[in-house]
Image (cartoon, rainbow, N blue to C red; front, side, top):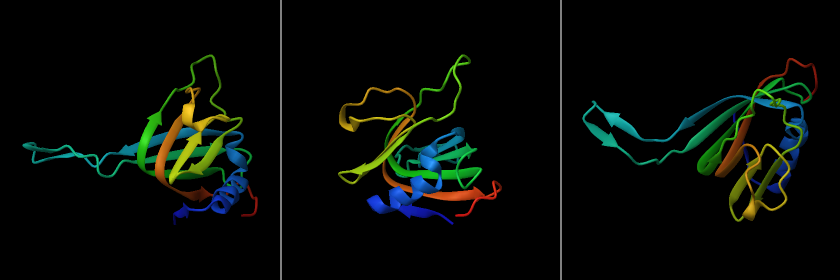
Length: 139
């Protein structure tokens, strides 16, 4: 079951449950645009869904695996780590400002004028769900 983040308190509770993404990593992503081809003849080229699903693995949150859904995304910046860097998230940012949610897999202080330094998502809605609780920690 998905839990939508609406208020600042919702964000705070979520971040506490997943230990602020610390010691997590992005396992996989799925993007659903809303565009499609009908019978191979007609192209419906309107991105009216724009949902991004990110599956995380974690060693320090209540959940070994959890998923975050960003709905109606406005921006996605993906700067994957290279072979010389690890993919562990050591710090993160998740805030709501002017009806948009901003998530960075690094600490970002200036969300309006940020310089990409990893993965960043800007979306109208954010929801999350635990996939499992195999670490034996309480919710």
